[in-house]
Amino acid sequence: MTLQQMEYIVALDRYRHFAKAAESCGVSQSTLSSLVQKLELELDVTIFDRTSHPVSPTPLGAEIINRMRQVLFNAAQVSELVSACRGESVGKISLGIISTVAPYILPKMFRYMSRSHPDIQLHVEEGRVSSIISRLERGQLDVALMATPLDDSELLEIPVYTERLLAYISPSAGFHHEKSLQTDTLPVDGVWVLREGYCPNRGIFPFCNMKSDHQAVYEAGSVETLVRIVDENGGYAIIPELHVPLLNEAQQANVRNLTNPEPAREIAFVVHRNFVRERMLNILADAIKTVIPERMLNQRIKKFPIVL
Image 1: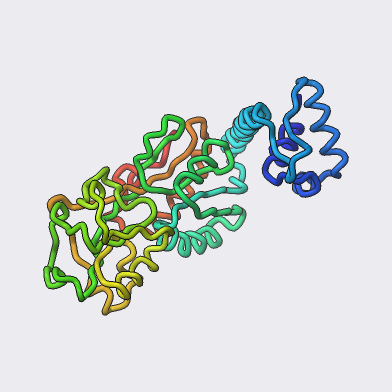
Image 2 (image 1 turned 45 degrees about the horizontal axis):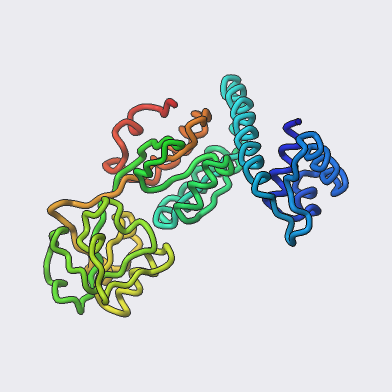
C-alpha cells in the first residue's frame, strides 16, 4: 500500500468518476483504475461499488477511505513541518469560513495576501458549520474561521477576536424608540433568525428556548439578506457588530445595543488536533489583524505569535 494509491482512492471518492479522478491526479484513467484495483486485491476487500452510478464506496470502503484521508493529512503535515523549519514558502492554504464572517474578512484578507504573500495560494470555501467541521476532520481543509466553542475533541480552537451582537429593529416595531434593549427581555414574536448561529451564547436570547407561531428562520447565512427581510417585513434580527459599517445611514439608525447581559460571539481559528502549520496560521492572523479593530482582537493573538 502506497501514499500514491491512497491519493487515487481519495480522489475517486471525491469525484465519484474514474475519468475526473484520474484527471485531477494527472494520470490516465487506466492507471488510476488498475492501482485502485490492485490495492483492493491486496487488502482482499471491495472499496468501491462499480455497479452504482456514480461509483460509490462500500460501507467498509467508506471507513477505509476516511482512514486514508487521515494518513495523507498526517503525511502532508510532516512535509509542512520540514518546510517550516527550513523557512520555505507556505504554498497553498485551504481555508473554510462561515457565511456570517466571510463578508467582513475576505475582501481585505485577499488584498493583504496578494500584496504581502503573493507566493501563497489562498483557497477559501464558504459553507455550513457542519460541512466545515466534517472537512476539517477529514483533512480536506487546513483551517477554518468560525464561531466557537464547538465542543469537538478532534479540533483545536484558537480565539482570534470577539464581536458584540446587536439588534436590528424595523421602524414599525413598537420598541424601535428605545435607545438600548435588555437581552433577557427581547420579544419572542417578530424575530427573524439565521439558519445556524443565532444562539451562539447557548440560550442567552429568549427566542433560543421558546417557540412562537410568529418566529421565522431564514434558511441561509446572509446577514445582508436578513436585514432586508426586516426592512420589508418588520420585526427585528440579531446581527454581528462588523455588519454595521456595511449598512446605509438610514439602516444604521435601526441598530440598538443589547445589555443585561451584553451578547457577543467568539470567532476562532479551528484546526485538527494534529495540525502543525504554525507559520501558516500566523500569516492568516497577521492578515486578520489588518481587518479587525484592535479592541476586538484576542489579547493573546494581539501580543504573541500562535504556538501549537
